Length: 384
Ligand SMILES: *Cc1c(COP(=O)(O)O)cnc(C)c1O
Image (cartoon, rainbow, N blue to C red; front, top):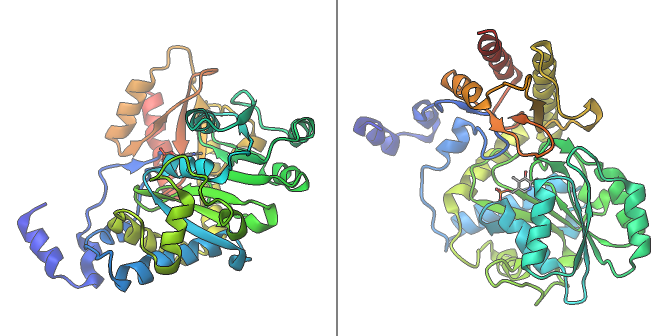
């Protein structure tokens, strides 16, 4: 940055800071970190004192309250705990703190993020079983009911809502009904869906919902959060298998005062606050969901018109991210990626073993007009 610009930024009024926040060199069509708005990036520009109410009350507590209100209409029964690190740190904190010594966890997995929960359970030596599916198959409520009926020792069930590996939207409502009927504690990795797809954690019987700063709320990376049923979290004292990732202790410290146990990612949290303002201005989760659905529809229709096919059938597609099959055996994704990047868009490689795919994210500060521009760029590249 030029010195005169820095001088200007330091002197200027908040009203015109936005004119001096540079645009990004390309749009990230990746599912987190993703493209953020200038308003969110501008909010990073000052320091905060972690001992003062300016930050703890007005930023942290405000963010926690707003997260609970996004998750449920029954706000009094839930609380939000913020945790340093990327989203996986919050998954590890949640699994490691939710299960008591007698607990047994069933993990449903049909992609890399379900598998990551299995790896976490193995590493923490949690008593667990896996309901494993191939990456293109959705979990079945009926099969789940069978597994729970056959193993009364299972106390907790964990699933991924949107499996970002493929873009599959797993059938949360149907699974939730079975978990609730069986009286199990329900943990949902809603990392890539929370804030972008409407649902109510209390109505679904979700006890722990996990997400992070850099997905559908459209903040910058740096922390995750768990929205927990108060009564269930309150019973987790002493469960944690890690000192730093103790969700219960973090909650006890943070709940009264907004203070984090260890250094708080202050700038990231303040940017997240700005991102929450922008989510509200867009009409909340339903407004954002409508935009993401429009992005996805524009993308899928346009890509199909160019000869690309989606990995998944329409009923399984999420509005978050879409996997496309390579159009031919000699398709070179590396070259394709570089050509598209030179023209302002970053795509995402595939992550599954069963088929050659690449992915395009629909989330972030991305609008249908951006997708139309992307489709023009892709048309130019494939016709060359
Ligand atoms: C992004 C994501 C995570 C967390 O990944 P991090 O790299 O740790 O932020 C977990 N689950 C799902 C479904 C995700 O999309």
